[in-house]
Length: 444
Image (cartoon, rainbow, N blue to C red; front, side, top):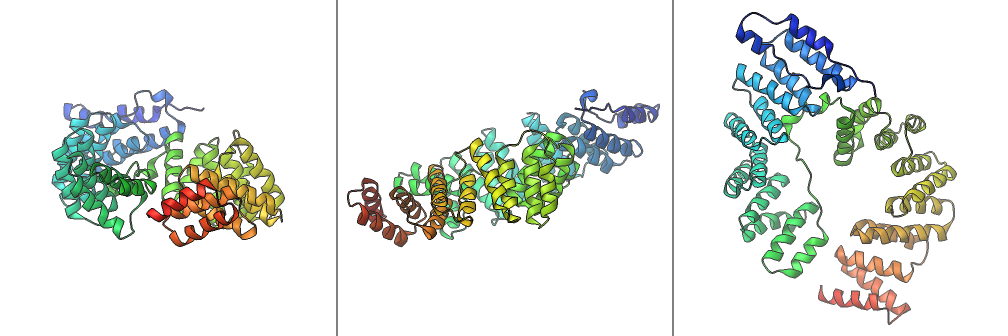
């Protein structure tokens, strides 16, 4: 890995040092302590922002930009110094204060971080996302009453944010107010607008209130929340990410959460900075394929650096399908399955290829295997879809029919589940799984 020391920046700092004590404080531009180990791309960015700052030491926006560049590349202590200087020049900078709070939180200076965030909210009291973030931090610190107050403030300012509803419910649950928390959650559940992570909290509330059946039903639909809620205060930060690990993580996160179109510029940047990152390369190829740029998508894969992995071979198979090259697609997806036979998505791809090559029995096998794997992970919609494809080209096995009935019950497709169970019992009246499913269906 090539490294570059930040010599230019230090030369600039020395040349701009004045005689007065106040000026020497102003030019103490923070840089990473281990400068010789800074990645080349990061060093170039920090040299630029540091040089711009050295030419306008009294400009708080320059301090904010340099601090943001440090923050974006995980130099949080140094970023905190820059944000503090921006605020020293102009105390009424809510964004600098907000970022200072987050930088302090990331280096585990929680009390200082909370104070800085509260100071920022004093400047922008109507910023609901800030109150939500404060509530999250207070919950993590065990400040239950304060967290509830902050969450209520965020909800009062904007009750339409699903993430704020989630945080408010969490704060109420920490205060053992399960009935009130459930009311907050059930409003979106009843409107059928709830993401999976709302059901996670609902399941816990139902359990605490002794409603076991509702708890189990909610648990079946549950899922993990976002690690970080979207927040406009950080909107400029992604454009300053230059570190290999940081840009790769962000690009893949953006691809997963916001889709390939939004992630494409960051995937391209990540691939350029870190060409050995195979998952980034596969995601970039998929993003290009989505835009119809098949030749560019293939070139990205052909220029592989590093060892091909599961995602790489799945993407190569998907791209080959788009190019109507089913023979190569089959070869690539089998390489993926060889690496991980428990990947349901790879089994789905293999089934699609086999079907289009006229290999019906093989397609049935792959689709039913995909459904089995989805059922194990309680991904009911995907399991039902795989089995629906399989049933279009042949008769499902009894195991496949049982999996389909289970998925239909979990998805509350009661009429379809009843038909599927009747079909199983007409084949084997003593099928114990089908009988158990039928008994459960009667209780629904």
